[in-house]
Image (cartoon, rainbow, N blue to C red; front, side, top):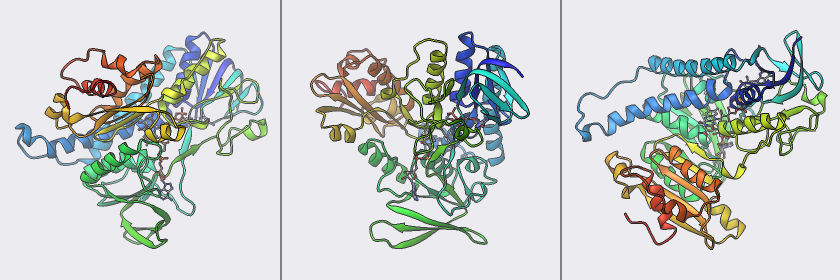
Length: 462
Ligand code: FAD
Ligand code: NAI
């Protein structure tokens, strides 16, 4: 039996970051992980592999659609699926090994196996029980399916199976027009699958700004994705040679079907806390199965903390990381803090979509007086040169004070551009502060400045 200041259970972005920060703050730290490799959902079956496939398939799309116009002639590349999966696996390997290296560098013990908490102050891994003054639960989340639908990860898959298909399917049905459905749907559409997205709501990406939802859906349709909206999936039936998806249209209750070789169920994720023994320990949970914590990630049981996907808030890697760092600081007696009002969300399709802060719909509901500064990438020289003129930057600012309340970007490198607005919001900046900042030319970021100018006397290039 070993004795630690902190044992973190789970090595995803929440857990491994918490462990590293704890060690850096001088706490004797171990991290329990049941998977073969460190890094959690994000590195093994989430962010990293999906981005590798998005990158490879985007390269193909560029070659097919834009190379000839730039004077780059020749046959478009063909898809070697095995090699693409190898590239994806190697990318995962480099990243998970990187965490192993960081654990060694920071003298963090990796306790291999599935952990449980038999009592406060103790963590059991296999046959061994270790002592811990503090325990951080960072056990993440798992895909949630629909009742009655059997996932085999071959023809009816979650995102995990969709990252590992034996071949590129001719026809794919994606259930759910959320982030996973649209990212992985885009991958397969680019690789040549006929992709149909079946969504319960009348719009894609619940929670995003309405104007972005509409523009983005239009763009995805142009890229070849089909959408069946307002449709509640009832059944997924495996037939001999194909899989049949039955859905009910909400507008008139009529039932229809669509066939596929592969069905991707992307209807959300749920917290994963199985086997930890939280029930017996008396840890309070929310009615959505999340571990309940206070503002400092403390549960109701002394010395037990929780962070990341298994607690409330957006299920995002960077949110988990920020909580990991802040929780470690709280344990070390410092002032850990996460500003939940400034957590960006990014969808890594092409174009990318990024958002931070309030949407117009939220501001309307709050009855807040606001102004909109919007700028199209068509007015951005760099974007036009790179065939990336579609989309816009939209900044929402308080009508009286000009303080930035939210921003929504659809366009090239949106996931990187959003961060200058995040920093501005963190500093309580006005749109004018961005507008007065000199931006290098020619960069995509000029579109952000122009949107900020549009909150005041107007942009120059539109
Ligand atoms: P996880 O990453 O889920 O890690 C938890 C770890 O705990 C797992 O490795 C698990 O094996 C381990 N564990 C669980 N129970 C035990 C136990 N009892 N003992 C030992 N180990 C245990 N987010 C983004 O921000 N950007 C993206 O681009 C993005 N892309 C995604 C793509 C896909 C396909 C998916 C599925 C998710 C994506 N996400 C993305 C979400 C992101 O992966 C999660 O928000 C993030 O991984 C949460 O981190 P976490 O540390 O809370 O948990
Ligand atoms: P999601 O919550 O984003 O979307 C699920 C969609 O499925 C919703 O639009 C919902 O209306 C729809 N749906 C639910 N039941 C349905 C039914 N019966 N029939 C038809 N449609 C139905 O969930 P998703 O896409 O599975 O992603 C899970 C989590 O993973 C997200 O919370 C996200 O934060 C995270 N993630 C983040 C990424 C990123 O940051 N780029 C990438 C991938 C995942």
